[in-house]
Image (cartoon, rainbow, N blue to C red; front, side, top):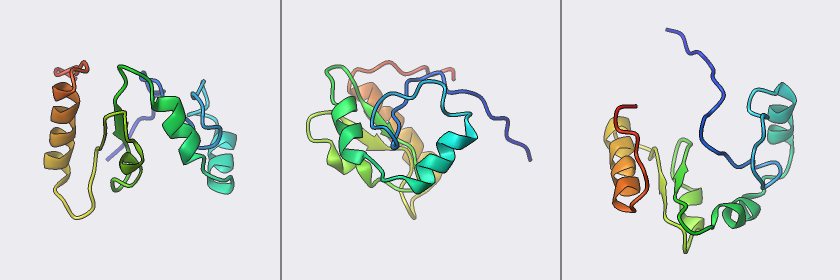
Length: 105
């Protein structure tokens, strides 16, 4: 099997800077800093807590979603839960919040 890396089309927030990611996803040095630096979760929450925004947490379990108190947030995966069911449930939450879902994608 093979995976082809592509630059994300949605906005992302960096755990390294706490702010928006601008072309850093494909920079190996960014990932080195990501592993070695302090993770700025509180800054991420502040950056993402804006009206009309919802958060889809990407990772092996839902840990950071609980930090959001006013912005809707949901995890794409949950430890020891079926992946497809969990992802579809997350997308359903996003749709229910009134955010756009690209269903054909």
